[in-house]
Image (cartoon, one colour):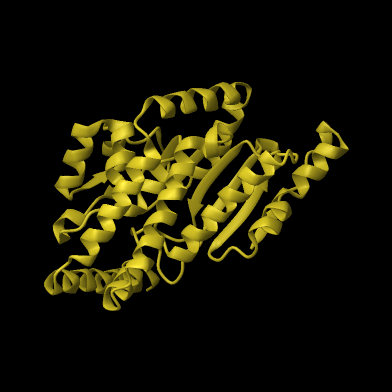
Amino acid sequence: MSQVHPVDTSHGVSAALSASGVVDRIVDRTGPLPQLQLMFEEQHRLLWLVMHPEPKPVFTLPLVDSVLRVQNALRAMVEAGEPMPVEVIAYRTAGPAFSLGGDLDYYLACLARRDRGGLVRYAETACAVMAGNLSGLGGRFATVAAVHGRALGGGIDPARACHVMVAEESATFCYPEISYNHFPIAAAPILTRRIGAVEAERMLLSGRAFTAAEFYEKGALEAVVDDGAGAMWVREFCTKTAASRRSRIAIAAAFDRMAPDLAAELAIAGAAWVDHMLALSEAEITRLQRIVQAQQRLLARSAG
């Protein structure tokens, strides 16, 4: 699915044409994008990646792969010297929750057939998306995430990898994996860059839920906004930072270079996660199956 907003022609015919066709040009490179909708707002030079995970609000492999293909298309377009009206890439999700985390159904299916390759593909795809968000696709774009509802475990990290993450007031954040002898793929390297290693470790080992205000106080959010105001905040952010955007992207890239090599850290984290998953006992796998059942009950109540 894609939608192109009306084009501001004040920058001339060529700019208008490049703006009006940006979604089509991306999709020409990516092909169909399951579970992902692209929306371009020319006024803000803003490309929305609106995530529609199915059948649950989790980061499914088709969704994560769609996001990665969009990232790769944008990189390729810039490298080819094509007109690029996009300056800000922003993420949000449809539905009552931002994300309930990684795709446990997929994990369990891989474990049932001892499919190491399937787990490796999931970890590598997710890590590539997070590396792209944190680096701004190599210092080319600003990245923003707008969170609402629940954000759990590995569902937090792709958003927190962005330069800016904003949450609505009623949003909640929790890394519950430790309670199930499990851990999110990239939370340690991603969180550490934002709030420091000590606070990140405490958060991951606590297993507790944090309100948006608490998450903000720990330095894990850039802003807390009224419920329903996340997308508007992103648009206002685009307007306020337009004049300094190149400098902001350059500063983010400089801090990224100063930090340890994220790609190497994510590769190690992803490999460790795959090994850990394949070493789970039957009892631990049963506990993961119970989480899936709990997710289904939660979604059934929400639907009712």
